Length: 503
Image (tube, rainbow, N blue to C red):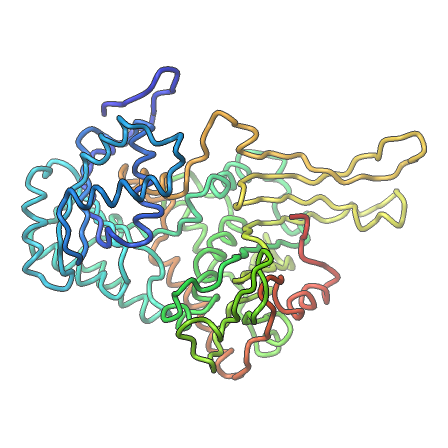
């Protein structure tokens, strides 16, 4: 593969070729414009796209190729830093683009895709479905029937894949009728984040953590994924889904898997995913008495964010004012196996929170014998803080002696900090979609979700949804701009703990 490198840059060393034809369905959608085009541009800028790689945009709107290139250029100027937009790279990237107007449900139009493919039959074709999951199967069938696919073709699908186990199986069956599992790439963009990838290195390359990563040394695990935004005009989708299906079923459970999984035999995709499935199978189900104690559902009311008044969920445009859909979930769960017996996992996610924040806190147990000031005993435990956003990084909170002649043996808590942007100031931290798209091009699946992972996650979430439905309780209200219902604080406080707040 020919590499393009500017003076002083390291040459890419990944073995897999990235020469592909990429057919992007939903090419004028929000995801494509905010994430996919900037990610592909950066891959080109880093010399990671082969000379022959082409991109075909497909959408229902009437547009010619030149108009499409203009729209993509506008997207790049809106979502890529001006200092990173280089004229030569932009010109080269835009020259890769082509466009077809297509009604995705009409099979006759797919012959145009086959004609476009004739120039690139020696290359694998990657089909990226940035559209609603209900038409995944139709697109796959029409591509196959038109002769646009071959045994190298791959398909990339975005979540949500269904809204429960049955609908998920229906979507996956439709995809699987055309593409074998080895050529299906289910994206959870959290898995492409630098810090999430570092979890594997942190856990399995460092004996310091590898020997401590169990119930003998860890007291509890805390995961928070907080969003400042509301539903952003997605009422129709979100009110059917809710925060449990939208965030817990995929993002948070994937993080639980990476924290809780046993060491894989190697770094092969299925070795890693086999261990993740074991975690999902071992998740504790919720009994009826646990629902009132260990699960809190919330729904935001009107409030303020950054000093600006924002409406409540039931006041959003198009809202059903009698909706019981949750915009916040907090829960205490666990993994029923030898490694994690007795270790609670506290999960929290919600919309209209004070900060955009994703982090994992590993709380280590205190020393069995404590010899320092009794009033500081609450400090005497280490915490590993893994930050996914807004800035990615890892910090280990340790205790040292407070300095000063008059301090005695007073303790002070401070971090051993690895902030990626500070530690590697000359290295741009790639967006998750850059890594994911590159792995698709190279045909590597370890960052993608296997079908049985999806199904076990849905089984666990479906049982919780069913239990909620039986109880017929409204979500607890919380003001926008707060950290959720007061009951979510009480839930963790009842165990003598609190949510980590050193944001």
